[in-house]
Image (cartoon, rainbow, N blue to C red; front, side):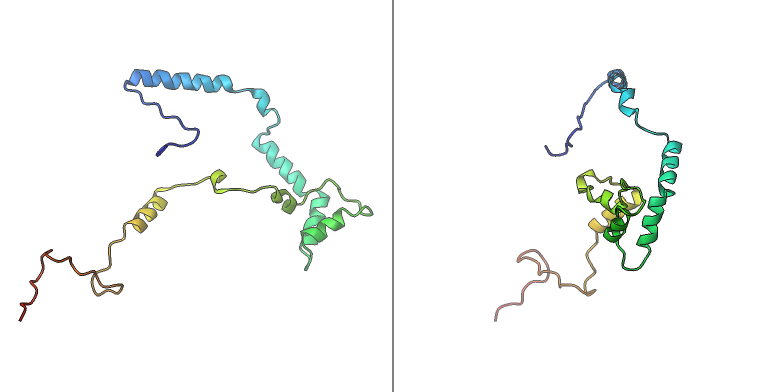
Length: 156
């Protein structure tokens, strides 16, 4: 429907007390739906930072970067060297390019950030005053017949 969004439900309440009770009920539903087991594999920010630092200092990743910095060596050639059975690199290493191949983002799942300045720019673009007469552009259309203006010259 016009003005509705998928997954969004509008609730209209007339009384302040009922609105407060409804919001408390919704918050309780949300709290009861939380299951800590769903987040067991998550890390704290410090753990995440340490994990990234460890992966970036890994010798295989360092070799990958060294190879990529050489002229005419792209991702495929660098990964061919790393996956060479005669070389002693981590064979489970996945290059950043390979990881990004699986990600196909659409406009629907991208976040959109709005600010007053971007909204103002859109409004300004939408409401552009017409250029003054003689400032270029096409000439204004003639007024319709009988819409005022100077009378037509008399017929001879």
